[in-house]
Length: 213
Ligand SMILES: [Fe+2]
Ligand SMILES: [Fe+2]
Image 1 (tube, helix red, strand yellow):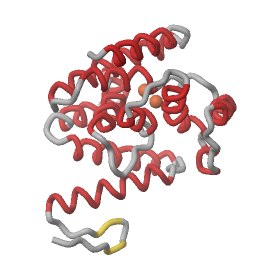
Image 2 (cartoon, protein in one colour):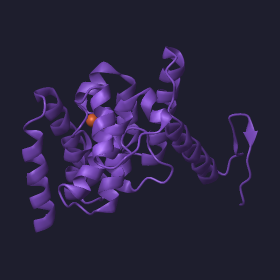
Image 3 (cartoon, protein in one colour):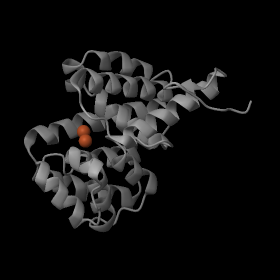
Image 4 (cartoon, protein in one colour):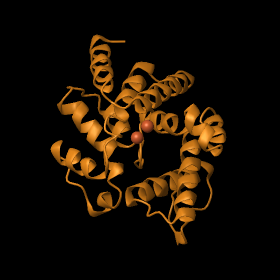
């Protein structure tokens, strides 16, 4: 681990000591899960570990505080964010990591910002963090479908992401939750990519789209 990475990791870990115990434990489990997955896919485990420790820095804040925290780090929440301001905790943590802690690894910060909703083009670090966050042991216990996603993440990271996204979409439909449009955009891109990879027809959500191979 480079000096910068270890210095930044130590600073974030120190910051996390002031967070609720449950959140600290979740973070530790995510880091362990992410490091194992990174080793499997030959991704630098130190960068993944740093992203894991940053990702939920503000997850404990209640709704109103999420909005205040976001504005404090320079994010203006959209009306879609205001429906469920908890979605802001990743972007807020990424901003704080950059401006308060001096972390400049763009892929690490993108991973942190995207770990709740996803983004169309996910760097490897982001794929690993998002999946590790969803399949860590406590989440697998609570949601048995995550066991299959975890297995799949060792065969095909993109397919695991897509399956998680489909599962989330199904949960939202079942519970009548509003799905954030960014999450839908990410899923849409992942579906297209998957179909291009498989050479299948690109017909999603009732809309025919073109592909060129
Ligand atoms: Fe989170
Ligand atoms: Fe998390």
